[in-house]
Amino acid sequence: MRRCVALAQSASSRREYPFAAVIGRRGEFICESLNMVRNERDVTRHAEMVAISSAQKQLGSTSLDACTIYSTVEPCAMCSYAIRESRIGRVIFGLRSPGMGGNSRWNILTDAGLSSILPEVFTSPPDVVSGCLHNEVEKVFQKRNPFIWQFVKARRICVDDSGDHRAVTIKGKMGVGPRSRLATWARVLIVDRLWRS
Image (cartoon, rainbow, N blue to C red; front, side, top):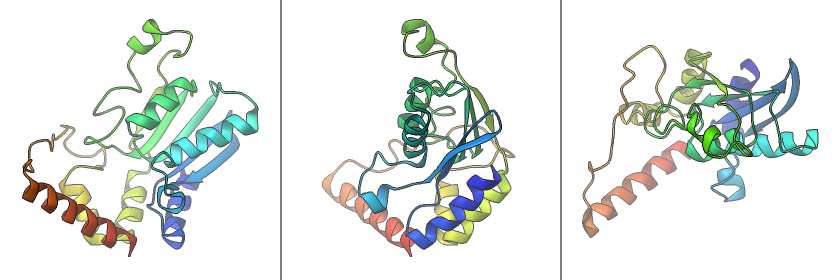
């Protein structure tokens, strides 16, 4: 996990968001990745997805059942399905994501029902450990852009494990008319621009 935090710290030099993932197996390093969404202009290039793809190529197998994935932030729903389908046995992350997380928001990582519905694809849920080095991860995000970090915390996009565990639904906070959609996109663009700076 310390390697994951160090990797996230290097993201700003590559003008990427500070999301990082590391995969290991039985104490042996397999691969690591930063988020590559901005650099590759591909929304599927989350750090976890890039790391899973790299590990499968290096190990010559789609099954990563003896592996552990470390991530700075709780994997999103998309990454969580990839983790489940690749059969990763353990997931360790720093900050929870009640707004978008594949465990605390949508319960994909620990959903035993996936295994019973399609056992040929999904094995038993992985062990999930949250809050690992959460203070160090929070410092990386805060250092990247203190203003944006306050926004991220206020929206409960990322939170540490020391506080309130209730997920906050943001749905319905912004209107649906053309003016409110424009205002929403303006806020998103401003936040993205600040995050990159």
